[in-house]
Length: 126
Image (cartoon, rainbow, N blue to C red):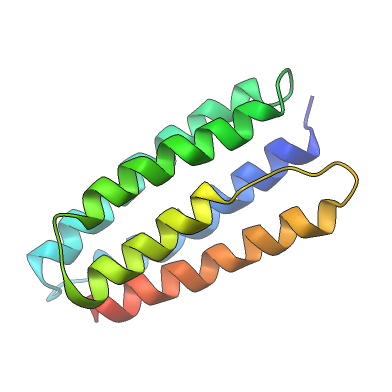
């Protein structure tokens, strides 16, 4: 029941949530960063929650990524500068998530890129 696609989705959500909680949850950061952190955490929780469907329908992974990307793009529209750019990069990464059973390493590369998006958001919030 613990399919590779579910493990990948959990890895993505964990990386993103851990990074944003640390980056935007610290005292002294701008209110916008705290709000962004909360919003992105909610979006990624929704994304992670939708992973129950992945075992039965691998396309659900891509759909969940697309939906999360759309929400992050909408959030990015509320900001400008580095923060908007970092959010748009995260949205692009989510939008590009695909599961390729013939090439699982490509999917893992996408997962690893997520940490880079989180780092950009952290930098914009710093």
